[in-house]
Image 1 (tube, rainbow, N blue to C red):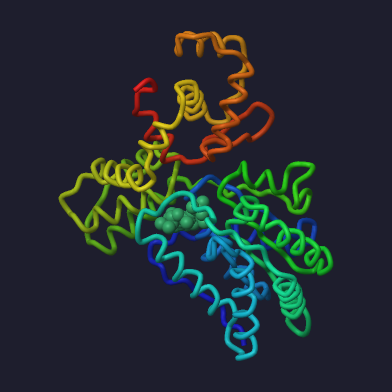
Image 2: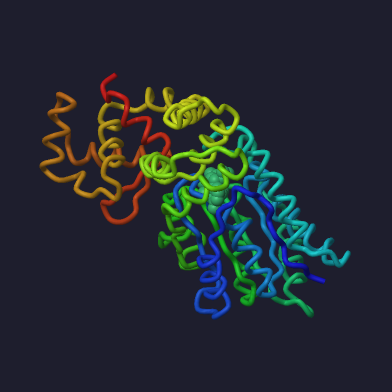
Length: 378
Ligand SMILES: Nc1ncnc2c1ncn2[C@@H]1O[C@H](COP(=O)(O)OP(=O)(O)OP(=O)(O)O)[C@@H](O)[C@H]1O
Ligand SMILES: [Mg+2]
């Protein structure tokens, strides 16, 4: 039996209509594989687990969620574990979705206890052996056969597969499996737009043309109103939801910072909201070594980063006017080639990503906010 799964996180702001619209897209069959994109900490994983999974479950899907960061050195193991658990729970006639998501959410909760480092890379990457990829193939096959044939795979942190050559055999075998089993629906999710584009968007990319990009919409004032209301209910204290909205907006509408700030305020009734946000930002800056990252950038890179941060989606960084300004600011002649080279380095370091021809966007919003308060030359 498959009981609908209801998350009981009081702080979770549900996004039912977006979840419904994605399930509908998957159902209709026009786009059976989607990539959900948004900058870091914008709520992609939370949406997958708390909104999309239960909605897909209600529509009759068996949902399997795997985060490819669950095992940084051997991402195939994360996929195998998730699939095996789904088969096992199915055998025991438990609700697959419920069980899997409980495990996944526990893991996410653990991650969320600290502020958490922003990037994680493999230090000893391991390639899957043939047995692993064959097992993945037959497990997906088994889960999508029989009476309950609707299978939705959620593959989170997919960009991780693009970080090591050792992971490429996994990518290609997944592609082959999913090409064979066309009825299987997939939602990929990645944190860095640039890295996702490298996997799905470029002509020689391993997943080129494999999935349709959908943007996770930004949260609006109804989100901060909701948080204020939950805060009031749980603490019996009132907070200024207008002010919360202003802070939220100033921080690139990043739900993570808002939740952390409210947590501090709940624990310390005397803490003013501004200080709560400042503390969160300071903690994030420290955990993620913003000083160190900033210190490793050249003056030109800092100036370029700040330009992108101030003007999201900014184009025209290569224009004559921009070159002249950059030359003035750095005190030495800057060329177009130099701008291109340093932008590439910022992209390679996951600080910004190219969103279109000559257009760039900041990837780490917390870092952008922090950087705006620094002097580029110091
Ligand atoms: N709908 C929501 N309601 C309440 N809080 C939310 C919501 N979405 C996100 N958050 C808060 O923001 C945090 C970050 O969300 P999440 O981990 O889902 O982001 P992400 O986009 O997956 O980040 P990453 O790019 O690091 O994987 C959550 O731990 C939670 O505190
Ligand atoms: Mg995530």
